[in-house]
Image (cartoon, one colour):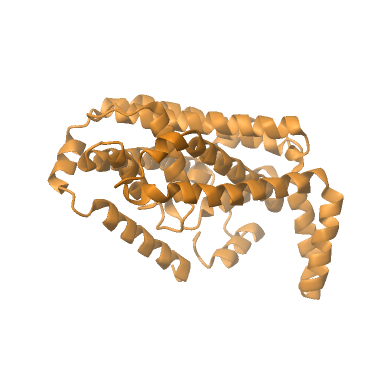
Length: 341
């Protein structure tokens, strides 16, 4: 809680929530929430967990060069990672699941973190694809649509960042020895002598985690799986929409999914408060959904995305929690200054 980044994130969340909800008739928002048909959340949650299972399979697939771990073993660890992302700042859940994988399956943290980072890059590329597939529709929404009017520029710069990162990882995976030499050059030039050997070993294990990208077929499989994951999540948006008295197309919800998940890369309070809600409300309002209805839907959707996976992750974590005295956890504590404690 001492880190200034956390307080900046909380400030950003507060500002975005204020901008999203100012001028609303809060009584109408509450009435819409009270009268929602919550039975529709059940198929939405079910299809969402199908996506989590596919995400677990994708991670199992990417870790095969390191160790063959069944998907049923990966699923609880993935849910714990979701829990960590939802309750801790700075996406600490990604590091948390890498540490738990180390303790349970003896996979090096640096290698599994490499696969986690690659996952996030592919997720970003798919989110951008969802946005670009709907750019024609998005162009119609720029008038009086608040922050949505700037999404084309955000998508452009986001595309540069994610595609550049993807190319770097692909090249590093295809030419590991050359990449290791470059890494060692930087390490020996800029790192203190006492840290050089350890840092070089970490870089080597990190490159090992990129082995799943060495084949174009493997990379395409990861991309295809990523598309399936996010289509399942969009399916949850669609089911939850039926709990409210409005309707937009599935493509509109794909666009919303892409925008809000790109926005959640912005620093925020734990649980992506504000960064998820403000762009979602703005986009639906631009589609002609009454702002109060758009707000109630987005808040319920956010809660439906947060509570079930967080509760399941907590259940799996409490069954076999971290060994807090371990070397890996001490490293996490030092790196995050108490964010995971």
